[in-house]
Image 1 (cartoon, rainbow, N blue to C red):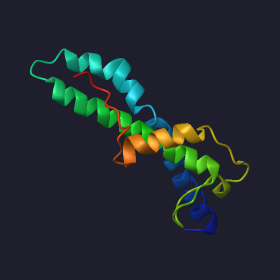
Image 2 (cartoon, rainbow, N blue to C red; image 1 turned 90 degrees about the vertical axis):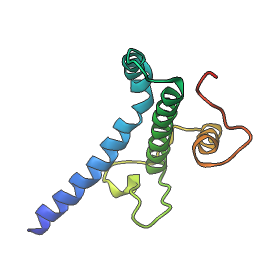
Image 3 (cartoon, one colour; image 1 turned 180 degrees about the vertical axis):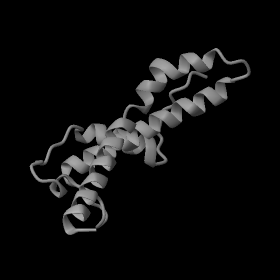
Length: 121
């Protein structure tokens, strides 16, 4: 493999990581707008299972949203984390404010008294 092919392959891998993260941010909207209605029609699918799937899709969306924010912000927690500066032509950007980041972190990554549920009991 030539150096040019190797560089192209590395760039391709980086693009795949970023585009899949963007796509994964839509797990919850897809669940809420389409998949939930289909599952409600199935016999034997109970509310506990529905709640578990709903929360899993929300958490998946939040994790990827936070990862995408960290990428664009330039937050590199580990040496192999991708950040915007790994790509030519990209500049630092943020789209979550501190309150939103804290809310996501509390909701998905910490045991907290403020944790909310998304399922009606």
